[in-house]
Length: 343
Ligand code: MTE
Image (cartoon, rainbow, N blue to C red; front, side):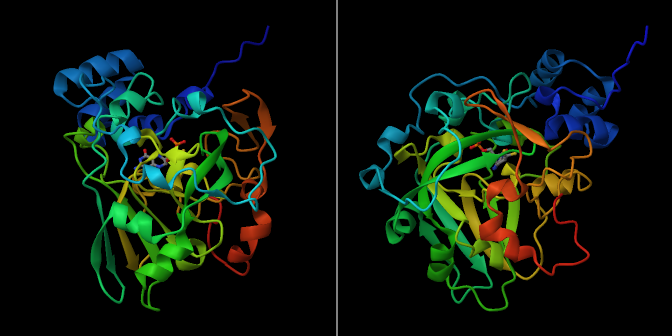
């Protein structure tokens, strides 16, 4: 009888996370967490050991009222926003109780089941919240999130959302086109990229106490990508201000790219000449690149991207090039040479 031994790299989908990649590949380089990964301790044992070092990703929700309760959001009068019919779906909207309990947010990540972060995220205060706009702009400034949101016209769009880990959902985001923000921010013509940065606050985000990650979370887009009609800054979901686990009070949604490009809880937007290096690219550039366009024909080095699991229906469905948004975005990449477009 042929017995097939599973190679160590052939992980089940649930274990095929960027973190597991990192822990197994960086081994002794990264201090305690890397060492534990190298020893191959199971998740629970890792968590206990990391807790004892004060390094755990923080999956224990602190007690008390949640300062991040979206019901108290100062912009809640703006919801529900006008629904934009131009964005339709080929699949059912993922029920809120499923999408709101399946979130990737490493700042609040847990060693045991890191997708269940809603409770710990709720402890993050949403106000005061400012966004710094700097770099190659006519005038650098820092704007209060409420002033920014009220300066934009909010709308609702139905978007597909595909994670590099081969799961997907479909959600009704509320927000405003990134191109509207760009006109408002007035970058100089020398700006080639828009770089976005998440908050840095290890007091509320225990995952940021892990010195093995190059916090804060950063990623970026070319100016042509940022000003494409589809690029969207999200402030709400399901007709309400977004709960923290979705990246409140401001996150990106670029549905033709893998989810890791969609930076959450943004505090700084910089217009720059040099291509930003995202957090995942810094950690593992062979597996996570700048372009990150969804492409079923290009497997991740350790798993296939040919299909995805819809977390709403549980069904597996074929993945489409550019996540089905090729008509809107393929032109952005025509003529680009010498680049690995789909990493
Ligand atoms: N942004 C920050 N700051 N931290 C993160 O861990 N995870 C990314 C992206 N943005 C992440 C982030 C990844 S890998 C995905 S798939 C999406 O957020 C998940 O968004 P969701 O939880 O709203 O589905």
